[in-house]
Length: 375
Ligand SMILES: C[S@@+](CC[C@H](N)C(=O)[O-])C[C@H]1O[C@@H](n2cnc3c(N)ncnc32)[C@H](O)[C@@H]1O
Ligand code: SF4
Image (cartoon, rainbow, N blue to C red; front, side, top):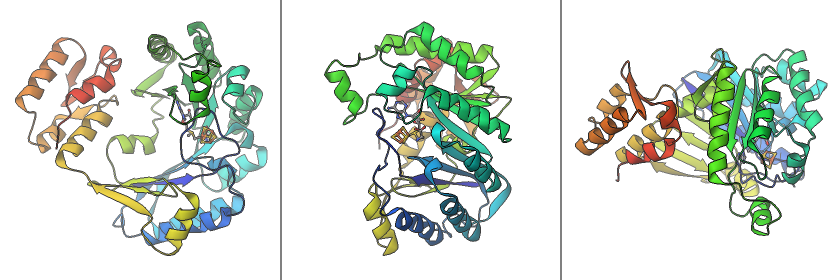
């Protein structure tokens, strides 16, 4: 079982908080870039040893900016070079203004069966300071139109811990998200990234820096509101109704193999992590010349152990005792640490797995880090 991630590094506008890899001036070279993505897929066809592709994820940037023929070109490159499973999950990240009738019909026809729609906030003023390219109305219309066109696996993205967002308003955002009857909600706490317009606004006092206490309160509100409405928190920031887990993301968290194509995309083959150059022009030129367009690092045993805790403890499944045994088991200090978490009610042990309790999830990063090993 394996997955493919395709990074589409195009955006209409620069959202003030975003530091993902994308460009807003891509029209001159878009066809070269799509050709390079297809060439990279072909060049790497033997890396997965004919394992079947169970998930494909188009992320970005803005995959919903792809033209119909660009999407089919990429899908042809995947289908002609890889063994694609019949039960494939194919996710497309969508910016609301792109969810037009024609696009939705085309995406469905091309086999996309899961949409991740970036709503971000239910307050128009937030969408303005975020510099989003859609209105509130376009956000909710996108979800409704996708449902009309038969998409039955829809996720929405919301951000909490926003400047000036009161807890009552956050509760309202969650209620409005729930009223859309989606199957999945991903919600991350706002991070103020270096070199973003948001950091500049906060430093100049144009926007208020959200307090950590308020962000923690909003995390707790989110867990409680979503759980009461039948959403299962299967990963710290991801909630699913009726087991509509994101298969592709779950595979990342289980450390399953995947290849990532496109500028800045990451790959993992079980022991080595690899990341592509985060520069569009260099990417398509270097792929075109088959000239080293990536860097790679073989994970040390300590790094593999650390990832196992970092990703595993964020999920409801936790870390299996078998996996821990595979590393030769806990060291005595780690064992003592584990026992104190178990007795303090921060972790629990069930059917051969260690996971975080509700209380433990509030300190997820700190608890995982306390198990980290040095090389
Ligand atoms: C990079 S975007 C790509 C998808 C699409 N272009 C969009 O904007 O919805 C993926 C998600 O990352 C989240 N995100 C990006 N930057 C973030 C930040 N600084 N803090 C919290 N969440 C962020 C947003 O929720 C966004 O939907
Ligand atoms: S949040 Fe999405 S649309 Fe906005 S700049 Fe980042 S990738 Fe592009």
